[in-house]
Picture 1 (cartoon, rainbow, N blue to C red):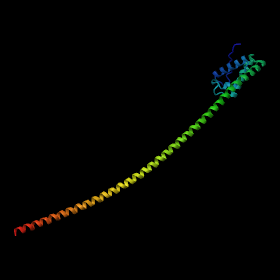
Picture 2: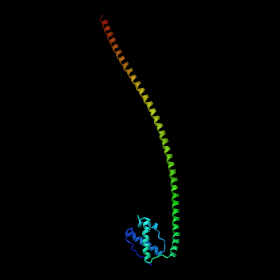
Picture 3: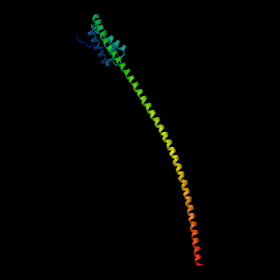
Picture 4: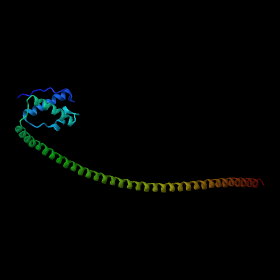
Amino acid sequence: MGRKRLKVSATLALTPTQREALSEVICASVESGAQIAWRRMLESAAFTGVAYDTLRREGKAVQRQLSKQGLVVPRGPLKRHLSEQDEAAGEPLDARTAELEALVARNGALVEDGGRQIKALEQQVAGLDAAVAKRDEQLDASREEQDKLHKQVEALQQCVSELSAIIASKDAQLEEANGRYDTLLQGIRQLASRGETL
């Protein structure tokens, strides 16, 4: 039997597109004798934003209109289809469960791997901290050595200053002695000149 498009009453709180989709789904279920998967219909993009109770209530209204038109599903085939659907629904559920278990296992592996990476990073940080501490010790030792050298330079500069003062004093004394020597030499020459005259 070919599918019949059913005009759903305008009192239903659905958009025209949603009414058309609901009519087609129910007609297909009636023709095949399958159970209407209300919750699965909600997962469809066609019924986004529609509440479960609203979909069931409006779906029942569509079924009543189908019943008035004589499109009633026999009990026998319905039970058979329900049983078949339950069996078919079990397979995706098992597959979904296996998928979730695999996902959990994968997440566990990722967490474990993340823990190893964090531990490795902590070891690297500890190594860097040790290297920084050693470098700080070397810098402190270098500063102490620089301070020691600076003090030695200051001491040498003080010695040079003192030696310069001593040399300057000796130069002054030498210049004074040279002056006295010149004076004495001049006096001796004058005396010698007078002696020759006499």
